[in-house]
Length: 611
Image 1 (spheres, rainbow, N blue to C red):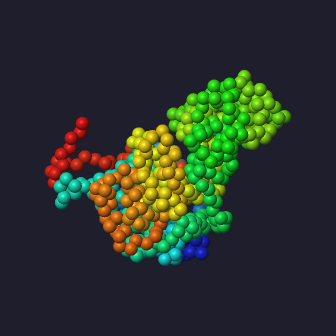
Image 2: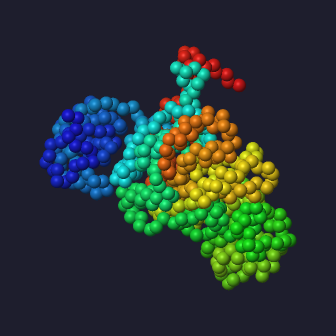
Image 3: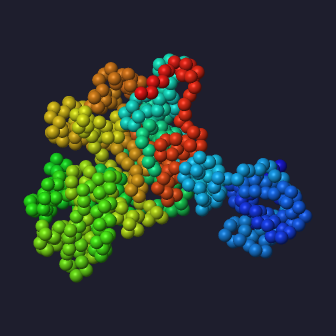
């Protein structure tokens, strides 16, 4: 027996018990004729005391950091207790010990405040995983996994595995492809999601399916992306949107309660996609703080239902200020209690919006002083009454700072959203310990691709239109005759029967009610530019299945890695994945991807031609 107890198990009540522990040497401290060793395993740390009789052996066989050690002895009450750890009131009076394995000197210290940089720790990830900080992240990941599975099991869902080697049907990101030796010249693809399989399971009668599943996308990486990632993937038959929202609100609330101890009893707020874009500049707003966008000027072809509201803006007409008058879009946020920003601070904000990631040419601002007077960066174009009117329109109060961006619609709206989030962070309004859930609903079903002059699916091609718009989609021709007039096409106003769940400004889940009738699915494919041959080639199996009694169904997929990162207070999902890739998609520990030898190329009947 290598051990009778773990290094995190023993307490004062175990005093006098003979035990055997095994683990890794954390530290060695020698004091004259006695030596203290902190022994660590996954469960904690226990102090070992080596008396004078064993010190001679330690001199002959010295212990180093990360040696694997077995120690036998008796539990004793410590004289110098360490109440910061659960085992800190006891120690082991060692009778005998065995070095099970030696260790080379680690390339960085195995502790929370390590001296190892990201690249070094990624290369030696098997050592990094020994650190408590990383261990806590993986424990949280496991807790989220367990809470999700328990909830779904109790709700009657069945965990069903789906294949990883499938057919390539690229619709969004690029597929990872895998050559088939047994079928020369042909390739599998790794699934970007189990989408079509879970729909086929609904056709098969498995009306409540889930899977905690790996998915693969060949796309550029960032902190919240990995080439392989994990989803909590779910599907239900005989449901409408409301059934899905209620079921999976319950799932996330259960995860909160089980993992964080937070009993999230509030109703989850709901917001249309149009309101999210109008009020926050993006479709995944952080609603932990206010600071909504004020729309001062927008193109007449965008937010058509809001045009009357925009006409009331003090800068809706000609102002004589070229930056405002020539802008397609003019938007602002009101920053509370920031009118005392210095010239240096406003200059910092101007430089921030000019960064390539934001892409704006500059920033205008109005300070509303405590006495009600105003000062702006464009005083020579507006008199004081005009500035006061503009500030009031942005709901500014004495002491507030109004920040204004001007430019093209898409870029400017994204930029004001980024600026809002930046100011929220800067002012301490985005508290990591506070959580706020939101459903975003009524997305457009289609987006217009200017380059291809065609429609593309905003979510994916299996998403159903809202029930009252199905006929609009079936009866109208998807062809866009006049590219400049695409917003007047009936397809431009079709809403998707889709929904995203947002947590603290991050999309953590998204799904839809699916198309389940062949005619409508064929119409959807045709709208995306697929002719009958392409439809049959890519999705003939699904269209055929719809002819055999496909039930109404819908589902959702949660970004498991991202959810764990948010609950763990991290910006990066890499911190919550045991063996992640770096920002270039490489596993620096395995040195993958790597070249294969000529024999493998010959077996696959593939010739490499690097241009």
